[in-house]
Image (tube, rainbow, N blue to C red; front, side, top):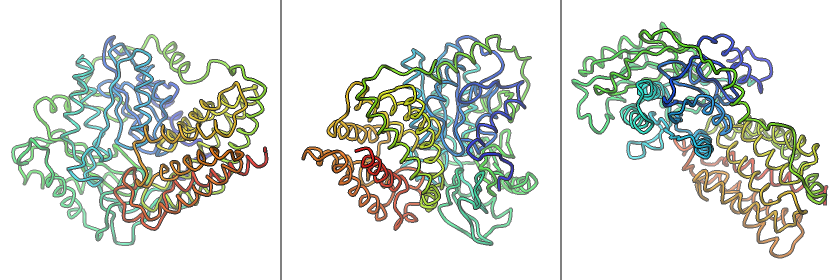
Amino acid sequence: MTRLFNDPAAFADEALEGFTAAHRRWVRPVTGGVVRATATPAGQVAVVIGGGSGHYPAFSGLVGRGLAHGAAVGNVFASPSARQIHSVATAAHAGGGVLLMYGNYAGDVLHFGQAAERLAADGVETRTFAVADDISSAGPEESAKRRGIAGDLPVFKAAAAAAEQGLPLEEVLRVAERAGARTRSFGIAFSGCTLPGADHPLFTVPEARMAVGLGIHGEPGIGEEALPTADEAARLLVETLLRELPEDVADPAGQRAAVILNGLGSVKYEELFVVYRRVAALLGDAGVEIVDPEVGELVTSFDMAGISLTLTWLDDRLEELWRAPADTPAYRKGALDAAEPDPDRASATAAAQDTAVPAAPVVPAASDASRGAADTVLAALDAVARVVDAHADELGRIDAVAGDGDHGIGMRRGSTAAHRAAADAHGLGAGAGTVLTRAADAWADKAGGTSGALWGTILRSLGTALGDRDAPDAARVADGVTEASAAVRRLGGAEVGDKTMVDVLVPFADALAAATAEDLPLADAWDRAATTATAAAAGTADLLPRRGRARPHAEKSLGTPDAGAHSLALITRAVHGALLDHH
């Protein structure tokens, strides 16, 4: 378990601070992550990678010449926010555009997509690419739904090496697509990981058993088998990957492959070498030529005891890029000329920070009526933070049934940050709309992940609807909730029946709109809608998840409500209490 920490909520920030202090030759800190400490040639495409903390050396340890130009670093097992990604990409941009790369998880897809939109609005040509290499998380016919694990490294490296060669953005993206299409990974685990401050792992494996097809966020495997010997583990990994070849590879014999045997946190290097000796022999027996293999910790999951095997099937071009030199804190290959320091590091850092935080503690002008309504908004956000804090452990337990168990942690981080930001804005005389939009940004930044993006969207939609000019009436609040419901569906792509928060948000919004159309006072209308939300959340227990990290473990979630749906129902009821107190 993770034993050395101060405040668990500050763990990711403090780890990044220590990392940058230890590796100043390679990286410099910017708001939201790190960028190269060395100069990037003008006009070169910037490859910016990122994801949650807890996976070192991914992602910050892969920043340096020959690999990433920057890494956006989120909280523990949570994607960085769009604002963090935008900040890092702005600092890394050298005039040739930006390729944002990340593992294929819902939160990362949402936040990196939003960051790409912001960069495009700034005039920065931007593309995105999600690595989806884990064959256990979806079948070949649904490969776009697969999550990214240790296959991140060869795909990141191919794109970054192409950028180093001066290729334009579209060609760098095509290289990433080619490498991604030819990369497959599969993993096993013998125990789950324990997050900082937690007293139990996110999942457990019975004695003398192993989990097969694990994820790197503490998601349980898709099945269990008897604990193997090292040779048996090697055979399982190799045979599983050889059963699924890229479309343009008919037979492994005569093919070349980049091979990564990855330790997930507590499997020691000597154990990895024992396994790799058999991996190499089995691949050789199949006629595969191994090119520059990597054996070690490359994408970890805190203290998870497990391993994964990655094969990237190489052609001449991909082999050239895989063999290209790189110099980063955690990954080095070949030799590079002496690095030139970045002459603009101080100004670049300041510019990145300017894009990530408000320039001064000021708020837009607001009417007295809107400032009065902000009192109620602040009370509601206080109620949200308190109910989330009270139920955080319960939410984590629900989420761990088929997911990674961090929903309560993320919701606590987000709701606490949102209330704090709202209180600051309220203290400056902000109206209801600004209080909500400041809360929205804080929730998205601090929570990260899917819930951070979606709750940021919900609060921002409400803030836009309420504005800072008038005292909002019940109809305007209902309109804001209706828009929030539509915005969440647009952003996340989920619909009713997918076993997500949408299964509660849509009926809640519909019930609130219907009640306000009957001219019920806001508190009464909200009460009716919250009752609908509670029933809808309970109903998700009968659904199979079709999206998110729980999807590969759909059957395990039957009988358990969706964690996001349950937390939303709790929040709607808590807000009703605040509305009664401020009626």
